[in-house]
Length: 505
Image 1: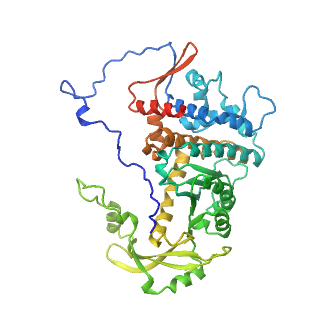
Image 2: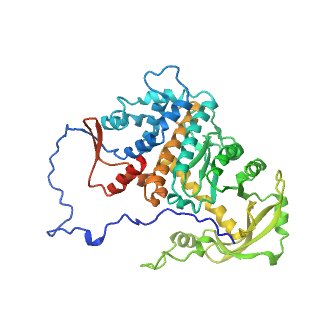
C-alpha cells in the first residue's frame, strides 16, 4: 500500500537556534543583569549603513535568475523610459514588500537609503507616488498575464536548479500538492473598481489563491469581485498551473474545500492528467446514498492528531481546557465528537466520465449543556477523489484535510507581506499588486529552498525577516568592488554567508 504523502509542519520549537547552556555568560557581580550604563551617541560618516542588509540575498537571487531581464522582455507598459524601466518599478515594489513595507508609501524607506541604492546598483529608486502611477498603467488583462508569466518562468527555473538533496522537502518528488482556496478581502474605499458585495454583505474583492503544499509557494493568484465564488476562476487557473507543475513533478493532486466541488474543476484536473481530492457537498442525492450504506461497511476512524503519540513527557501534565470548563460553569451548549467512522462508495459526479471514490466520514456529535448529554446526532463529511485504490480511505481523508494549512499561507500573504493591501482604485492595478506580492512572497520561499536550512521554508515572515532581512550592514565602494559588510554579531551570519555563496553558483 502506498504511504500517504508526508506533510512537513512548521517548527514549534527553536530547534537549531538556541544557545548551548554551557556557553551562556554569567554576571561577574551580584545585582540586576541589565545595568543600563550611560551611553554616548555619535554618527559615523564613513560608508552607508542600513538595517536591510539581508536584501543582499534577494538581490543576488534576482541577479542569478535574470529576473529584471525577464520582466523587461515580457512586460511593455512604457513608450519611453524616463528613466525607469518596467523592471525597476516591479522590483522596487517587490523589495519593499520583501523587506517590511505594508503600503506604497513605505517604498520611501528604500528610496531614501543610499546603502540600499548601492546594493541594487541604482542612482535612485522610484518614488511611492510614481509606484502608484505604475500600477495604474496595467489597463488590460494581457498585461497582468505578462507579469504573471515572468514569475512562472522564474519558478520553473528554480525548480530545475534545485538539487535532489534540496528537493527532499517534497518527499521524492512524486506528487505536487496543488491547493485551491479563496479569501474575502474587505475594502474600505467606496471607489474601488471591480469590487462587489460578498455573500455576507461586505464590500470586497475575493481573490483565488493556488499554492504548492509543503513549501507554500504561490502558483497563481487571481483577483475577483466579492460577489462571485472563489472557485469561479479555479478551472482556468488549473489549466495554466498543472502543465507547468507536471513538467517538474511525476503528477499532481488538486485539493480544495466544498466550494470547489464543481464539474469544471474536476474536468480541468482530469484533462491535465492530475488527481483530485476535494471536499464534497452533501446534496440530497448524495445524502440518500450515504444513508443507504450498511452498518457493517463503516470502519472506525481516529483523527490524525489523536493517532500521533505525544512528542515527549510533559513537566506539568495535561493542560486544563479552560474554555470547556467555563462553558460548563455557564451551562452553555457545547458540541463534542464522540466517535468517527469511515466508508467508501462509488459515485460519478456530474461532468465526470467515470465513477470516482466518495469517501464518507461519519461523526457522532454529542450536545450537552454542562449538566449532562442532551442528545446525539450524526454529521457526514464527504471527499471526492480519483486517487488509485492503493490509497486507503483514511489516507485520502488525511491528505485532503492537510489542505487546511493553506489558511496559514493566505494569512501570511496578508499579514506577512501585505499582499491584500489593494493600494489603488483600479481593479487591474490591484491585480498587478497581487502579482508583485506573489513575486515577493516566492522570493523568500525560493531563497529558503535553494540556500537556507530546511526549516526556514516553513517560517513565518516575521521570523524570517528578523533573522535574514533585518541585518545591520555597511555598503562600501572599494576600488572597483562593492562590498557589503554585515554585522559580525548576527547569530545567523554563517548561514547568510553560505546562502550568498550558493546563490552565486
